[in-house]
Length: 265
Image 1 (tube, rainbow, N blue to C red):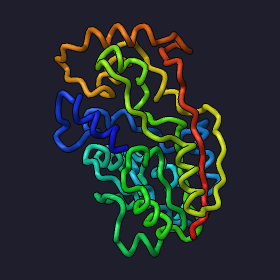
Image 2 (tube, rainbow, N blue to C red; image 1 turned 30 degrees about the vertical axis):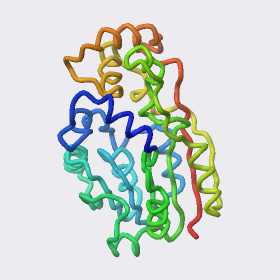
Image 3 (spheres, one colour; image 1 turned 180 degrees about the vertical axis):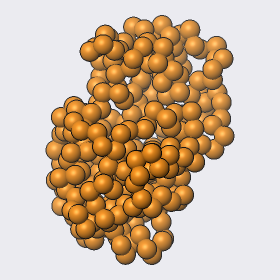
Image 4 (cartoon, rainbow, N blue to C red; image 1 turned 90 degrees about the vertical axis):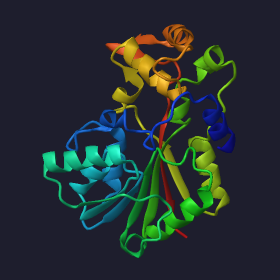
């Protein structure tokens, strides 16, 4: 994780102004009443009507908001102002009032969170957290029943790892994925239940409408500026990688999503 961060800082051509997700936040919006999303269906199967969930790194409310339609309360932890703005707008649009949206980072020392939550959730959070022990300790204290994670077999930040050598002249330093996360939980003595989810509902994240959209995502994943001198090399590398798929464009290495559940100690 440290090596990945140091590599990103070294090749980064522009700063994000403190909110990395500001240009991308709108892409993380999702209909709270959607159907056919295998990850959401799995979470709803776990939920109970009188539950309080804490969603750590809740983003634009992809899971916080639909969960709130089925449980008593959701505490959504999200440090990105752009993500919080998207979620707040969706709350208003859909009339969802039982989400407590908080500008916080994790680990949290808020006694309300650590005493009220039945389930603690992370969705594609944790790939690049260097102090993961403290993160999990607080997550497990916050959940009276169980902890849940959605993880891909490799980090979404590595989605365009194949083009790194052509653009930066070096391989991307990979972050841990689901298997490493499960191994970590086991080493901590957790009772872990993990299963792969069907590929339903994730289409918009890994199938691009146009090659230009894929190019823009790749540019951000490789930390290039809009006027970078490396854009031609990136464009050629991405064009060789893309494949037509179901009316869009996809990458050959599609991530597999895992649902991981473990009991608190």
